Image (cartoon, helix red, strand yellow):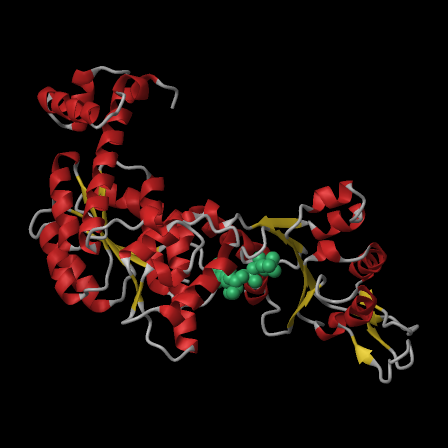
Length: 451
Ligand SMILES: Nc1ncnc2c1ncn2[C@@H]1O[C@H](COP(=O)(O)OP(=O)(O)OP(=O)(O)O)[C@@H](O)[C@H]1O
Protein backbone atom coordinates (compact mmCIF):
# COMPACT_ATOMS: atom_id res chain seq x y z
CA UNK A 1 0.00 0.00 0.00
CA UNK A 2 1.92 3.05 -1.16
CA UNK A 3 0.54 6.34 0.01
CA UNK A 4 1.99 9.24 -1.99
CA UNK A 5 1.84 12.65 -0.42
CA UNK A 6 2.32 16.13 -1.92
CA UNK A 7 4.02 18.54 0.48
CA UNK A 8 3.77 22.28 -0.22
CA UNK A 9 5.93 24.54 1.96
CA UNK A 10 7.97 27.60 0.96
CA UNK A 11 10.25 27.54 4.03
CA UNK A 12 13.12 25.33 2.94
CA UNK A 13 14.22 24.19 6.39
CA UNK A 14 10.70 23.25 7.42
CA UNK A 15 10.05 21.57 4.07
CA UNK A 16 13.11 19.39 4.55
CA UNK A 17 12.26 18.56 8.15
CA UNK A 18 8.72 17.55 7.15
CA UNK A 19 10.04 15.53 4.22
CA UNK A 20 12.33 13.64 6.63
CA UNK A 21 9.36 12.90 8.89
CA UNK A 22 7.38 11.51 5.95
CA UNK A 23 10.28 9.46 4.73
CA UNK A 24 11.00 7.95 8.14
CA UNK A 25 7.35 6.97 8.46
CA UNK A 26 7.60 5.12 5.15
CA UNK A 27 5.52 7.47 2.98
CA UNK A 28 6.39 8.32 -0.60
CA UNK A 29 6.24 12.07 -1.14
CA UNK A 30 7.00 14.95 -3.46
CA UNK A 31 7.99 18.27 -1.86
CA UNK A 32 7.41 21.58 -3.68
CA UNK A 33 7.98 25.20 -2.64
CA UNK A 34 4.88 26.97 -3.96
CA UNK A 35 1.20 26.57 -4.78
CA UNK A 36 2.00 27.00 -8.48
CA UNK A 37 4.46 24.09 -8.37
CA UNK A 38 1.88 22.06 -6.46
CA UNK A 39 -0.66 22.50 -9.27
CA UNK A 40 1.86 21.27 -11.85
CA UNK A 41 2.73 18.27 -9.66
CA UNK A 42 -0.98 17.44 -9.28
CA UNK A 43 -1.43 17.55 -13.05
CA UNK A 44 1.45 15.09 -13.45
CA UNK A 45 0.77 12.42 -10.85
CA UNK A 46 -1.72 11.02 -8.39
CA UNK A 47 -1.48 11.81 -4.68
CA UNK A 48 -3.42 10.36 -1.74
CA UNK A 49 -3.10 13.58 0.28
CA UNK A 50 -1.83 17.18 0.06
CA UNK A 51 -0.21 18.92 3.03
CA UNK A 52 0.08 22.62 2.38
CA UNK A 53 1.32 25.71 4.16
CA UNK A 54 -1.08 28.66 4.20
CA UNK A 55 1.25 31.67 4.04
CA UNK A 56 3.26 31.46 0.87
CA UNK A 57 4.43 34.11 -1.57
CA UNK A 58 2.37 34.11 -4.78
CA UNK A 59 -0.77 32.00 -4.47
CA UNK A 60 -1.50 31.21 -0.81
CA UNK A 61 -2.76 27.97 0.71
CA UNK A 62 -6.40 29.07 0.80
CA UNK A 63 -6.41 29.91 -2.92
CA UNK A 64 -4.66 26.60 -3.64
CA UNK A 65 -7.26 24.79 -1.55
CA UNK A 66 -10.19 26.23 -3.46
CA UNK A 67 -8.58 25.39 -6.81
CA UNK A 68 -7.92 21.84 -5.65
CA UNK A 69 -11.54 21.53 -4.44
CA UNK A 70 -12.72 22.35 -7.97
CA UNK A 71 -10.23 20.22 -9.85
CA UNK A 72 -9.76 17.26 -7.49
CA UNK A 73 -12.88 17.18 -5.28
CA UNK A 74 -11.96 13.87 -3.59
CA UNK A 75 -8.36 14.76 -2.76
CA UNK A 76 -7.90 15.29 1.02
CA UNK A 77 -6.02 18.48 1.91
CA UNK A 78 -4.36 19.26 5.26
CA UNK A 79 -3.44 22.88 5.91
CA UNK A 80 -0.61 24.08 8.17
CA UNK A 81 -1.39 27.41 9.76
CA UNK A 82 0.43 29.75 12.09
CA UNK A 83 -1.13 30.27 15.51
CA UNK A 84 -2.36 33.76 14.72
CA UNK A 85 -4.37 32.37 11.82
CA UNK A 86 -6.41 29.88 13.83
CA UNK A 87 -9.63 31.71 13.06
CA UNK A 88 -8.99 31.26 9.37
CA UNK A 89 -8.51 27.55 9.92
CA UNK A 90 -12.24 27.33 10.58
CA UNK A 91 -12.78 28.99 7.18
CA UNK A 92 -10.37 26.49 5.66
CA UNK A 93 -12.40 23.61 7.02
CA UNK A 94 -15.57 25.20 5.69
CA UNK A 95 -13.80 25.53 2.36
CA UNK A 96 -13.12 21.79 2.36
CA UNK A 97 -9.76 21.14 4.03
CA UNK A 98 -10.02 17.84 5.90
CA UNK A 99 -8.01 19.19 8.82
CA UNK A 100 -5.34 21.68 9.79
CA UNK A 101 -2.19 21.76 11.87
CA UNK A 102 -1.19 24.69 14.03
CA UNK A 103 2.54 25.43 13.81
CA UNK A 104 4.67 24.43 15.60
CA UNK A 105 3.41 20.86 15.75
CA UNK A 106 5.00 17.54 16.63
CA UNK A 107 5.85 14.91 14.05
CA UNK A 108 3.49 12.53 15.87
CA UNK A 109 0.53 14.88 15.35
CA UNK A 110 1.29 15.17 11.65
CA UNK A 111 1.55 11.40 11.25
CA UNK A 112 -1.71 10.82 13.10
CA UNK A 113 -3.54 13.21 10.77
CA UNK A 114 -1.97 11.61 7.71
CA UNK A 115 -3.02 8.20 8.95
CA UNK A 116 -6.55 9.43 9.46
CA UNK A 117 -6.96 11.12 6.10
CA UNK A 118 -4.61 9.54 3.57
CA UNK A 119 -5.35 5.91 4.21
CA UNK A 120 -9.14 6.07 3.89
CA UNK A 121 -8.76 6.56 0.16
CA UNK A 122 -7.13 3.21 -0.44
CA UNK A 123 -9.96 0.74 0.05
CA UNK A 124 -9.30 -0.88 -3.29
CA UNK A 125 -5.64 -1.60 -2.65
CA UNK A 126 -4.19 -4.92 -1.53
CA UNK A 127 -2.66 -5.99 1.78
CA UNK A 128 -3.66 -5.33 5.36
CA UNK A 129 -4.97 -1.89 6.26
CA UNK A 130 -2.55 -0.31 8.72
CA UNK A 131 -2.91 3.40 9.37
CA UNK A 132 -2.37 3.74 13.12
CA UNK A 133 1.35 4.32 13.77
CA UNK A 134 1.63 1.08 15.80
CA UNK A 135 -0.02 -0.92 13.00
CA UNK A 136 2.32 0.55 10.40
CA UNK A 137 5.28 -0.41 12.56
CA UNK A 138 3.93 -3.93 12.97
CA UNK A 139 3.49 -4.28 9.22
CA UNK A 140 6.97 -2.92 8.53
CA UNK A 141 8.39 -5.43 11.01
CA UNK A 142 6.37 -8.24 9.43
CA UNK A 143 7.68 -7.30 5.97
CA UNK A 144 11.25 -7.47 7.28
CA UNK A 145 10.84 -10.77 9.07
CA UNK A 146 9.11 -12.14 5.95
CA UNK A 147 12.42 -12.01 4.10
CA UNK A 148 13.95 -14.51 6.53
CA UNK A 149 12.72 -18.07 7.04
CA UNK A 150 12.12 -17.51 10.72
CA UNK A 151 9.12 -19.03 12.49
CA UNK A 152 6.66 -16.33 13.54
CA UNK A 153 4.11 -16.45 16.33
CA UNK A 154 1.28 -13.95 15.83
CA UNK A 155 -0.79 -13.20 18.89
CA UNK A 156 -3.85 -11.05 19.37
CA UNK A 157 -7.48 -11.14 20.42
CA UNK A 158 -9.92 -12.99 18.21
CA UNK A 159 -10.68 -11.12 14.98
CA UNK A 160 -7.74 -8.69 15.12
CA UNK A 161 -6.42 -9.85 11.73
CA UNK A 162 -3.85 -12.50 12.62
CA UNK A 163 -4.55 -14.57 9.54
CA UNK A 164 -4.40 -11.47 7.36
CA UNK A 165 -0.95 -10.73 8.79
CA UNK A 166 0.17 -14.32 8.21
CA UNK A 167 -0.84 -14.13 4.55
CA UNK A 168 0.94 -10.83 4.25
CA UNK A 169 4.16 -12.41 5.59
CA UNK A 170 3.84 -15.20 3.05
CA UNK A 171 3.20 -12.76 0.20
CA UNK A 172 6.20 -10.65 1.18
CA UNK A 173 8.49 -13.68 1.37
CA UNK A 174 10.55 -15.49 -1.25
CA UNK A 175 7.95 -18.26 -0.97
CA UNK A 176 5.14 -16.05 -2.29
CA UNK A 177 4.63 -18.09 -5.47
CA UNK A 178 4.49 -21.36 -3.52
CA UNK A 179 1.47 -22.63 -1.53
CA UNK A 180 0.09 -20.95 1.57
CA UNK A 181 -1.77 -23.58 3.59
CA UNK A 182 -3.74 -22.66 6.70
CA UNK A 183 -5.08 -25.16 9.19
CA UNK A 184 -7.21 -24.25 12.17
CA UNK A 185 -6.08 -26.50 15.02
CA UNK A 186 -9.26 -25.75 16.99
CA UNK A 187 -11.63 -26.72 14.19
CA UNK A 188 -10.39 -30.28 13.58
CA UNK A 189 -11.25 -33.10 16.00
CA UNK A 190 -8.19 -34.29 17.97
CA UNK A 191 -8.21 -37.76 16.41
CA UNK A 192 -8.18 -36.27 12.90
CA UNK A 193 -5.60 -33.55 13.46
CA UNK A 194 -2.60 -35.81 13.30
CA UNK A 195 -3.55 -37.42 9.98
CA UNK A 196 -4.58 -34.04 8.58
CA UNK A 197 -1.21 -32.50 9.42
CA UNK A 198 1.11 -35.41 8.74
CA UNK A 199 -0.83 -37.39 6.12
CA UNK A 200 -1.32 -41.12 6.24
CA UNK A 201 -0.59 -44.30 4.34
CA UNK A 202 -3.27 -46.61 3.03
CA UNK A 203 -4.57 -48.84 5.84
CA UNK A 204 -2.92 -46.82 8.60
CA UNK A 205 -6.23 -46.71 10.44
CA UNK A 206 -9.81 -47.78 9.85
CA UNK A 207 -11.18 -45.79 6.95
CA UNK A 208 -7.76 -44.93 5.47
CA UNK A 209 -8.65 -46.41 2.11
CA UNK A 210 -5.95 -44.54 0.22
CA UNK A 211 -2.67 -42.83 1.05
CA UNK A 212 -2.99 -39.09 1.52
CA UNK A 213 -0.46 -36.31 1.94
CA UNK A 214 -0.77 -34.09 5.01
CA UNK A 215 -0.81 -30.30 5.19
CA UNK A 216 2.93 -30.25 5.79
CA UNK A 217 3.58 -31.97 2.48
CA UNK A 218 1.01 -29.83 0.66
CA UNK A 219 2.75 -26.70 1.91
CA UNK A 220 6.18 -27.89 0.75
CA UNK A 221 8.19 -24.99 -0.65
CA UNK A 222 5.68 -22.55 0.83
CA UNK A 223 4.20 -21.56 4.19
CA UNK A 224 2.08 -23.49 6.68
CA UNK A 225 -0.10 -21.50 9.06
CA UNK A 226 -1.08 -23.27 12.28
CA UNK A 227 -4.05 -21.21 13.40
CA UNK A 228 -4.97 -21.31 17.10
CA UNK A 229 -1.91 -23.38 17.96
CA UNK A 230 -2.78 -23.34 21.69
CA UNK A 231 -5.61 -25.78 20.92
CA UNK A 232 -3.22 -28.49 19.73
CA UNK A 233 -3.18 -31.55 22.05
CA UNK A 234 0.06 -32.10 24.00
CA UNK A 235 0.87 -35.39 22.23
CA UNK A 236 0.76 -33.74 18.86
CA UNK A 237 2.82 -30.83 20.11
CA UNK A 238 5.72 -33.25 20.64
CA UNK A 239 5.39 -34.49 17.06
CA UNK A 240 5.23 -30.96 15.73
CA UNK A 241 8.39 -30.09 17.61
CA UNK A 242 10.14 -32.99 15.95
CA UNK A 243 9.06 -31.82 12.50
CA UNK A 244 10.37 -28.34 13.26
CA UNK A 245 13.71 -29.73 14.45
CA UNK A 246 14.25 -32.38 11.81
CA UNK A 247 12.61 -30.59 8.89
CA UNK A 248 11.02 -33.84 7.80
CA UNK A 249 7.64 -35.45 8.25
CA UNK A 250 6.46 -39.02 8.54
CA UNK A 251 2.97 -39.95 7.38
CA UNK A 252 0.85 -41.90 9.88
CA UNK A 253 1.54 -45.59 9.20
CA UNK A 254 4.71 -44.90 7.21
CA UNK A 255 8.33 -45.65 8.01
CA UNK A 256 10.00 -43.34 5.54
CA UNK A 257 10.44 -39.68 6.48
CA UNK A 258 9.77 -37.08 3.79
CA UNK A 259 12.12 -34.06 3.73
CA UNK A 260 10.36 -30.71 3.98
CA UNK A 261 11.12 -27.16 2.99
CA UNK A 262 8.46 -25.12 4.73
CA UNK A 263 8.10 -22.05 6.81
CA UNK A 264 5.84 -22.26 9.84
CA UNK A 265 3.64 -19.43 11.07
CA UNK A 266 1.38 -19.86 14.08
CA UNK A 267 -1.34 -17.75 15.64
CA UNK A 268 -2.82 -17.70 19.09
CA UNK A 269 -5.50 -15.70 20.83
CA UNK A 270 -4.48 -17.08 24.20
CA UNK A 271 -1.40 -16.00 26.10
CA UNK A 272 0.87 -18.90 25.23
CA UNK A 273 3.25 -18.19 28.12
CA UNK A 274 0.29 -18.69 30.52
CA UNK A 275 -0.57 -21.93 28.73
CA UNK A 276 3.03 -23.10 29.29
CA UNK A 277 2.88 -22.14 32.95
CA UNK A 278 -0.37 -24.08 33.39
CA UNK A 279 1.09 -27.15 31.70
CA UNK A 280 -1.13 -27.05 28.61
CA UNK A 281 1.59 -26.08 26.16
CA UNK A 282 5.12 -27.44 25.81
CA UNK A 283 7.76 -24.95 26.79
CA UNK A 284 10.30 -26.16 24.20
CA UNK A 285 7.71 -25.79 21.42
CA UNK A 286 6.76 -22.36 22.70
CA UNK A 287 10.37 -21.15 22.39
CA UNK A 288 10.76 -22.72 18.98
CA UNK A 289 7.60 -21.05 17.66
CA UNK A 290 8.15 -17.67 19.16
CA UNK A 291 11.51 -16.99 17.52
CA UNK A 292 9.83 -13.87 16.23
CA UNK A 293 6.68 -12.84 18.10
CA UNK A 294 4.30 -10.28 16.55
CA UNK A 295 1.25 -8.95 18.38
CA UNK A 296 -1.80 -7.28 16.81
CA UNK A 297 -3.31 -4.87 19.33
CA UNK A 298 -7.09 -4.93 19.76
CA UNK A 299 -8.95 -2.62 17.35
CA UNK A 300 -9.94 -0.27 20.20
CA UNK A 301 -6.23 0.34 20.81
CA UNK A 302 -5.66 1.49 17.23
CA UNK A 303 -8.47 3.94 16.57
CA UNK A 304 -6.86 5.41 13.43
CA UNK A 305 -7.38 2.03 11.73
CA UNK A 306 -11.17 2.03 12.23
CA UNK A 307 -12.29 4.34 9.43
CA UNK A 308 -9.77 3.12 6.83
CA UNK A 309 -10.77 -0.49 7.63
CA UNK A 310 -14.46 0.43 7.35
CA UNK A 311 -13.80 2.03 3.94
CA UNK A 312 -11.80 -0.96 2.73
CA UNK A 313 -14.44 -3.45 3.89
CA UNK A 314 -17.20 -1.34 2.30
CA UNK A 315 -15.32 -1.40 -1.01
CA UNK A 316 -14.63 -5.14 -0.84
CA UNK A 317 -18.18 -6.22 0.09
CA UNK A 318 -19.98 -3.72 -2.16
CA UNK A 319 -17.96 -5.01 -5.13
CA UNK A 320 -18.69 -8.60 -4.17
CA UNK A 321 -22.40 -7.79 -3.95
CA UNK A 322 -22.29 -5.92 -7.29
CA UNK A 323 -23.41 -2.78 -5.51
CA UNK A 324 -22.05 0.75 -5.79
CA UNK A 325 -20.09 1.80 -2.69
CA UNK A 326 -22.39 3.71 -0.28
CA UNK A 327 -21.25 6.63 1.86
CA UNK A 328 -21.07 6.54 5.67
CA UNK A 329 -23.07 9.41 7.15
CA UNK A 330 -21.26 11.66 9.66
CA UNK A 331 -23.33 10.09 12.47
CA UNK A 332 -22.49 6.56 11.31
CA UNK A 333 -18.80 7.49 11.27
CA UNK A 334 -19.11 8.86 14.80
CA UNK A 335 -20.71 5.56 15.90
CA UNK A 336 -17.90 3.54 14.36
CA UNK A 337 -15.31 5.67 16.11
CA UNK A 338 -17.10 5.53 19.47
CA UNK A 339 -17.69 1.76 19.51
CA UNK A 340 -15.25 -0.34 21.57
CA UNK A 341 -15.14 -3.31 19.14
CA UNK A 342 -14.94 -6.33 21.48
CA UNK A 343 -15.01 -8.53 18.35
CA UNK A 344 -12.29 -6.47 16.65
CA UNK A 345 -12.05 -6.28 12.84
CA UNK A 346 -14.30 -9.28 12.38
CA UNK A 347 -17.08 -7.44 14.21
CA UNK A 348 -16.48 -4.38 12.04
CA UNK A 349 -16.59 -6.60 8.96
CA UNK A 350 -19.96 -8.07 10.03
CA UNK A 351 -21.34 -4.66 10.85
CA UNK A 352 -20.35 -3.29 7.43
CA UNK A 353 -21.93 -6.27 5.68
CA UNK A 354 -25.20 -5.73 7.58
CA UNK A 355 -25.12 -2.04 6.76
CA UNK A 356 -24.70 -2.75 3.05
CA UNK A 357 -27.91 -4.73 3.12
CA UNK A 358 -29.87 -2.28 5.25
CA UNK A 359 -28.71 1.07 3.84
CA UNK A 360 -31.02 3.15 1.70
CA UNK A 361 -30.24 5.73 -0.99
CA UNK A 362 -26.51 5.09 -0.85
CA UNK A 363 -26.02 6.45 2.68
CA UNK A 364 -25.27 4.30 5.73
CA UNK A 365 -26.96 5.57 8.90
CA UNK A 366 -26.09 4.50 12.49
CA UNK A 367 -29.07 2.12 12.74
CA UNK A 368 -27.86 0.28 9.61
CA UNK A 369 -24.67 -0.70 11.45
CA UNK A 370 -26.69 -2.56 14.13
CA UNK A 371 -24.04 -1.89 16.75
CA UNK A 372 -24.88 -2.87 20.26
CA UNK A 373 -24.68 0.64 21.65
CA UNK A 374 -26.85 3.49 22.70
CA UNK A 375 -27.07 5.35 19.43
CA UNK A 376 -28.82 8.32 21.01
CA UNK A 377 -25.56 9.07 22.82
CA UNK A 378 -23.87 9.69 19.54
CA UNK A 379 -26.52 11.14 17.26
CA UNK A 380 -27.22 14.78 17.92
CA UNK A 381 -30.61 16.03 16.88
CA UNK A 382 -29.44 18.50 14.29
CA UNK A 383 -28.57 18.31 10.61
CA UNK A 384 -25.40 16.34 9.84
CA UNK A 385 -23.47 19.26 8.37
CA UNK A 386 -24.18 21.36 11.45
CA UNK A 387 -23.12 18.53 13.77
CA UNK A 388 -19.91 18.13 11.85
CA UNK A 389 -19.23 21.86 11.86
CA UNK A 390 -19.80 22.02 15.60
CA UNK A 391 -17.48 19.06 16.10
CA UNK A 392 -14.74 20.71 14.09
CA UNK A 393 -15.07 23.99 15.93
CA UNK A 394 -14.93 22.26 19.30
CA UNK A 395 -11.93 20.32 18.16
CA UNK A 396 -10.23 23.50 17.02
CA UNK A 397 -10.92 25.22 20.34
CA UNK A 398 -9.62 22.21 22.26
CA UNK A 399 -6.39 22.29 20.33
CA UNK A 400 -5.99 26.01 20.85
CA UNK A 401 -6.52 25.51 24.60
CA UNK A 402 -4.00 22.70 24.66
CA UNK A 403 -1.43 24.79 22.81
CA UNK A 404 -1.79 27.60 25.34
CA UNK A 405 -1.47 25.21 28.28
CA UNK A 406 1.58 23.52 26.74
CA UNK A 407 3.26 26.87 26.10
CA UNK A 408 2.54 28.13 29.60
CA UNK A 409 3.91 24.91 30.97
CA UNK A 410 7.07 25.24 28.89
CA UNK A 411 7.48 28.78 30.21
CA UNK A 412 6.76 27.65 33.76
CA UNK A 413 3.65 29.83 33.95
CA UNK A 414 5.31 33.09 32.79
CA UNK A 415 2.59 34.76 30.76
CA UNK A 416 4.69 37.41 29.04
CA UNK A 417 7.13 34.82 27.69
CA UNK A 418 4.30 32.45 26.78
CA UNK A 419 2.53 35.19 24.80
CA UNK A 420 5.77 35.94 22.97
CA UNK A 421 6.32 32.31 22.15
CA UNK A 422 2.74 32.03 20.89
CA UNK A 423 3.17 35.15 18.76
CA UNK A 424 0.24 36.97 20.40
CA UNK A 425 -0.03 40.02 22.62
CA UNK A 426 -0.21 39.65 26.40
CA UNK A 427 -3.72 41.11 26.15
CA UNK A 428 -4.87 38.46 23.70
CA UNK A 429 -3.45 35.79 25.96
CA UNK A 430 -5.39 37.24 28.91
CA UNK A 431 -8.54 37.21 26.83
CA UNK A 432 -7.97 33.60 25.74
CA UNK A 433 -7.29 32.51 29.33
CA UNK A 434 -10.55 34.12 30.41
CA UNK A 435 -12.35 32.23 27.64
CA UNK A 436 -10.76 29.01 28.84
CA UNK A 437 -11.86 29.66 32.42
CA UNK A 438 -15.40 30.28 31.17
CA UNK A 439 -15.26 26.94 29.40
CA UNK A 440 -14.40 25.30 32.74
CA UNK A 441 -10.65 24.79 32.25
CA UNK A 442 -8.70 24.91 35.51
CA UNK A 443 -5.66 26.66 34.08
CA UNK A 444 -3.46 26.56 37.16
CA UNK A 445 -4.08 22.86 37.69
CA UNK A 446 -3.40 22.09 34.02
CA UNK A 447 -0.21 24.13 33.84
CA UNK A 448 1.29 22.95 37.08
CA UNK A 449 0.16 19.33 37.03
CA UNK A 450 2.77 16.73 36.09
CA UNK A 451 2.61 16.25 32.32
N1 LIG B 1 -5.61 -5.12 8.70
C1 LIG B 1 -6.63 -5.61 7.98
N2 LIG B 1 -6.85 -5.17 6.74
C2 LIG B 1 -7.89 -5.66 6.04
N3 LIG B 1 -8.77 -6.56 6.51
C3 LIG B 1 -8.59 -7.04 7.72
C4 LIG B 1 -7.51 -6.58 8.53
N4 LIG B 1 -7.56 -7.21 9.70
C5 LIG B 1 -8.62 -8.02 9.64
N5 LIG B 1 -9.26 -7.94 8.46
C6 LIG B 1 -10.48 -8.67 8.10
O1 LIG B 1 -11.14 -8.99 9.33
C7 LIG B 1 -11.58 -10.34 9.37
C8 LIG B 1 -10.89 -11.07 10.53
O2 LIG B 1 -9.51 -11.19 10.28
P1 LIG B 1 -8.66 -12.54 10.61
O3 LIG B 1 -9.44 -13.76 10.23
O4 LIG B 1 -7.30 -12.37 10.03
O5 LIG B 1 -8.61 -12.40 12.19
P2 LIG B 1 -7.96 -13.41 13.25
O6 LIG B 1 -7.26 -12.57 14.25
O7 LIG B 1 -7.15 -14.45 12.52
O8 LIG B 1 -9.23 -14.03 13.90
P3 LIG B 1 -9.39 -15.40 14.80
O9 LIG B 1 -8.49 -15.27 15.98
O10 LIG B 1 -10.83 -15.38 15.17
O11 LIG B 1 -9.01 -16.53 13.88
C9 LIG B 1 -11.27 -10.91 8.01
O12 LIG B 1 -12.44 -10.79 7.24
C10 LIG B 1 -10.19 -10.01 7.45
O13 LIG B 1 -10.28 -9.96 6.06
